[in-house]
Image (cartoon, rainbow, N blue to C red; front, side, top):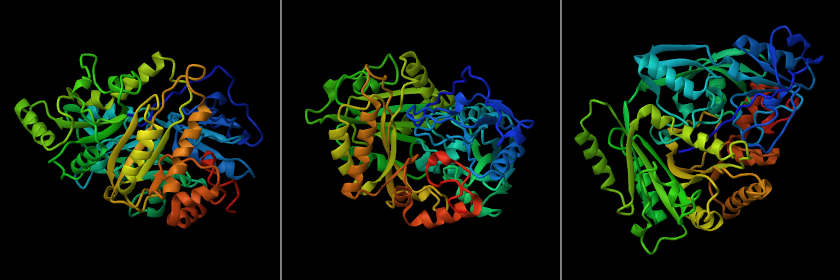
Length: 509
């Protein structure tokens, strides 16, 4: 439904003033206003970089990193479309690279062993990739995020998760080649067979090992239409059994998209029943709910792709067969047939609505995490039904993913369970006095995380944010040694991505 939303505002301040540390770059770069990199979508952190540079080519990125390496203290952060929540793309008194400047090139279709791929810039938005691939080639990437106003390099540095992940894996599993500029200022083309350690390290690597300047993405034929559906559950056990059954069906036998979310069992316009219908002509009828329904309900969101040439009876038959095996509440079902591109861009409406309500620029204390199947029922009981029973002022996503679709060679870490759930608390709340204090919401996030530790849950933060290396070591677990070794290999001075707060400049020297 919603993975990420983004805002990128250019202020009226002057361009970054040259400094002795960056004077060598003055003739090579356009210096952008510092204000564009001093804040992010999260709105809870601020940082003043020494300079904001707009690189237009990979060679420009190389120049910037090498210039930083000649100093004793400069760091470099690659900033995509500014959608980080906790300052991950910031560089206090360092260099910030506005990667959107690289967005136009390359963009090239090619076939590898008969399979279509597209080479795109790390600074391109996924929305741009979608539109150009469909209009030029009638092809599309297989795996998406829900919100497409994110850069290719940004999501590949984390994972990239949405309702197609159960089928094709995260976006990191759908890339066959990268061009990366390491913390040493060297540019490499890398894939499974060439510079493979850098390739695996960079995917989900939180920007620690290199700046992704190009990615080769697997494509497939673009569908024309989508049958989009939502059904409701009052019992979490029924919801999880059905969702897990759907994501384990063989390709071609099930839906093409499976997500879900939690809503408050009331008429709250921001957290309850009104958030479930997909259009103004649809109405939620609570009369159909069983008397045993608790404080929250669960909505399973599904989609089936099809061609314009498909007979409606064929689409109906497949949908009815799949829905017939589910245990959702009878009498509460919503569906619509929409164009494929409109479906993928559906979160645009959320963005527009948030702007209209004046909450787009408010702080966003979001929390994203993965929780194993073995612990998800306890999480529901302790968090959804108690701590969050009144909602969060935005979507609460919860749906299953398959560990088999994730590559252990990548840097991203996930729970050990064969099936685990993504949970996302995506708050859209007006700032005080209309909304609660941001620090109170951050404290609630921290309480949820601490509860998971106390209960011994098998979980990992997604889009993680920690302020101590001890917590980072706990996050990576037995992969921490590999992570440190990769850092020593590709960014030994710890120049890159200082906003992640994993390593300090020169720490590994």
